[in-house]
Image (cartoon, rainbow, N blue to C red; front, top):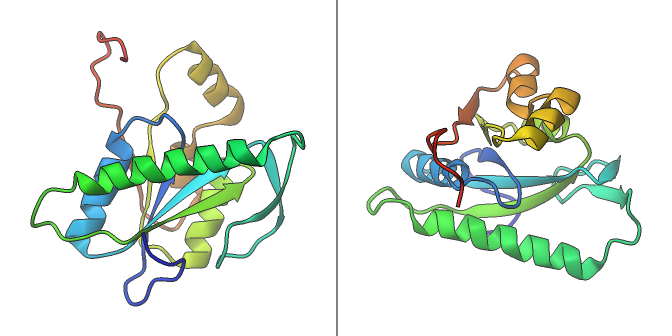
Length: 172
């Protein structure tokens, strides 16, 4: 992991979330390594809302759940960092190295990723497809698809990484 600011090449932006299928991070890390560009991994906390935007740092936000424990936030951040490092460690040999950073944003995931992409002038946004299941379909019906919103409202290319497990297999 490197500092928040990258010198030289603009970073790729990947939207991440806890327990996300690993193909998203693996694809983003491999692509970043092959292109020789850094990777900004952004987690959007939907339980918070944005009170100030500062692209150089994580968003300043207020929790919609003020009882949320700082220890829970640290645990979540540690889990996400571990997932990112695991994906970076799986980059095929000879592809190059990946400098990465984790950013925590607030609010609507699609709009937060779009705003960060514009501010950081990233060449591409990478997101995953929705998980299968009734609760995920209901959430997508109510909130919309992050990938679909980004492809319709961004001037940046959007790579939507599919969930590769065949439909007939259960998720472990």
